[in-house]
Image (cartoon, rainbow over all chains, first blue to last red; front, side, top):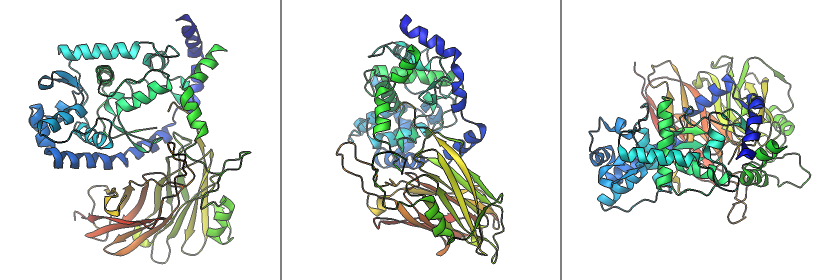
Length: 253
Length: 159
Length: 113
């Protein structure tokens, strides 16, 4: 769409209004310190307690996934992934739900504080690991391709795609005082669930992406849907390509 | 200019949300009557309440660390270190954190003792607008010293 | 939220310390710190002020830091002070909010001498 391309090309040359909003080293150090005292850690702890009480904790999770407890961190780092007994590429929250069904327990809604806490806890088990999406696994490849397509598809009232604001070409430009991030370089796929300062609460990747879609006037994609999981697989692969380690809970604006 | 409109109209929904219902409403200079908080107090009045009108000099002994630009006005990190002993008869008695433009200028009053070992305190505060953060320190001999730093608060971003 | 349910954390840094060391005592608590100036988006009603207004840090029952806190402090607040380690002991953080809610959290002080 030429009408959109021209303004974007112009803005590349005007790129560095961005610098005045880019973080100074001193500020970056302050915000890094904040990560060491992240209120979301309390929710991560809570998630672990719920998982333990209700489902049998790490031991039960490892058993469900068919790995040893020692292998659990590396296994978690490969999510979202294809789980044969579920016949689908799923996220960790859906794994928790499946465990609940298997044990005859009440299923926690994907979009609930309880689930966000449990998801954060489970993902935090993989802290320090670089995520790994297995593109040789056919179902994963399908999911990745769907995610990439979703990322690139222009839609909605303004004909925007995720790529319109998050492509390498526009990264660093400023949108409403915020420099646009390269989702791979900032490890988006490895640092959610995170504490969002503007919301003072624990938020998940899929929920954040939904918020972003709303702001860009795109129709919101449901949590846990094929497209949303595909998106998560795609950005997790981007984090892998940038060697961004998993660090939960994250800290975001 | 097409670009300006393009970027300005992006995040149209969140633009309204941000301006219409600010999450921090703390005494901005605006034509409309803004509701006063339960603890409304100006910086000058708060400083006076703390020092009883005594002189307060800026001192390099008070090391105040705040971000130059706050990523978000709701969670602004503040750190104070006072270069002063913490002995039984000579110690940092209190650290007060104030803001210059919030409706309630006061954030925290921290009463320390020699048991702390160091005159240090850190927290995170809300800033309703670009303004200074001030650390007012009371020493055990009854004297006051302070340091202040400006923080830019941007209300922006998408959502 | 009932008093027993309020979640908080005390962290001591560094993790390994000896008697005589000065450690950092960090306290984080989940609390709305409502200023009383915000309206509920759904109901349009003003959300009443609810914020932690006082905190006492004690070591084996003896206060070593007291704080008066205002609604200016961020939601889910963080407070950090130093403590010179006198030996083994128990740190207790007691806090109240402006609605009279009282809570506390403890953590053992275990120097590795």
